[in-house]
Length: 467
Ligand SMILES: Cc1cc2nc3c(=O)[nH]c(=O)nc-3n(C[C@H](O)[C@H](O)[C@H](O)COP(=O)(O)OP(=O)(O)OC[C@H]3O[C@@H](n4cnc5c(N)ncnc54)[C@H](O)[C@@H]3O)c2cc1C
Image 1 (cartoon, protein in one colour):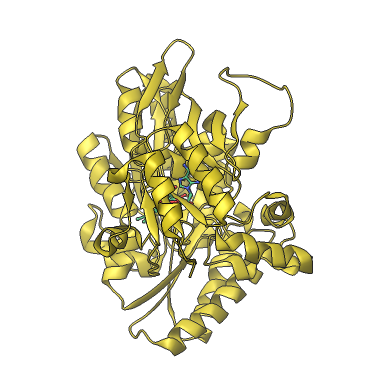
Image 2: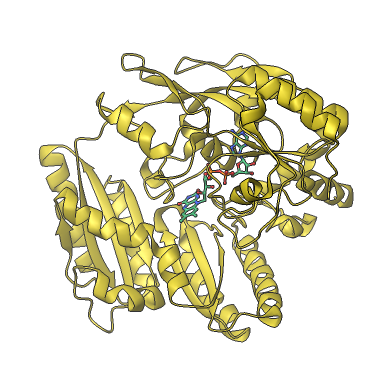
């Protein structure tokens, strides 16, 4: 564990004020967790209010070689916000201001601690839409979303966080404050540093401000709910839908094991031999929306779906989406051990992925629940067990490795949205990087100019040496 010298703490206190530097164990405990099951107590927690304070903090930490871990709302599911070597947790939640919403330029400027849901509500009041909607959108921060390039159900039609970031203000490890990108909807001057920072999980820089692109609020959204005999027939309907020039706003599925635990929670009777549930959001105006409903409904029925239920009121839609968004917790309630991965494959490979994941899970003694973003080929593969002990954890490691290898062999990648953090860093070896975005990560790490950073730099650096 990193030792924190008293002199460092007192210098930090003079930068941030006594109120915003914590070392009391009970206060540190509020920052020892994230969305994983791991717990690590930091040495200090700081809550800056300005970019300048963060810059001074980073200069000081670099001098003392103390790790600094940026943290938003702590909902990350790969451990990136945990202080696994101690050090300083840099909480960005005090920097929570929406600085500007320009409804003419359709651009907004926010601080990193703004909560996604609050931002979505604020732009909605101006008739605008910010689509990135991770299932954690009610609690996760825009800074954390940028650091993870978070996605969500509506990314199928609208893209992930990356597609809505025009520019950033960042602080580098040595305290340098930098602006990247533009405040305009276009801009091609210089290297694209903005995209380099998005998805870098707090390893390259701290995001202290973001310029976000907005779009007009879609007219009306309706949700269709239907079920299919199996994943193969379901995937078949997908290409028929897009061939009809329709891109659903969201296209989410739940497999048979998932369906079995939510049968009573959803307002549709699913025939027992229909094992895969599909949730489709369509959005648009008037006749065009009617056409989409008609075409998509018919395609589903023609491809062997059961009845197609239409949820046209916001209350009915909320009921359905609550079940989908809370599925992670629903699985947890039904089991003692759960390991979730978010592998992503080309859409045509989804049936092969799911069938083989089921085999891998069975081989290692797990019950397998699959659900997720069908339209993006992003499947949340969950391995569960009624017991929880060291052997089960070890077996889940083996099974996860096989699932990652499977995904890469199908042309996919080991994470579509949750990132690498500490939970997947050991899987970033050269053989598993082909065709995936991860290889960029590995090679970039040595560029990081300081060691006053998180542990996973060190681990990644060792991987890059292997490469
Ligand atoms: C129930 C549940 C559902 C989820 N569903 C989804 C989903 O549908 N899609 C999805 O993509 N993710 C999902 N997640 C994962 C998580 O919510 C996202 O990764 C989210 O973007 C994390 O935001 P946060 O504010 O909680 O970040 P944190 O957990 O605090 O941090 C996450 C990472 O970002 C870094 N970071 C945070 N803020 C900054 C900053 N300002 N500058 C630099 N680095 C920073 C941290 O160091 C860490 O590495 C889910 C999590 C839960 C618990």
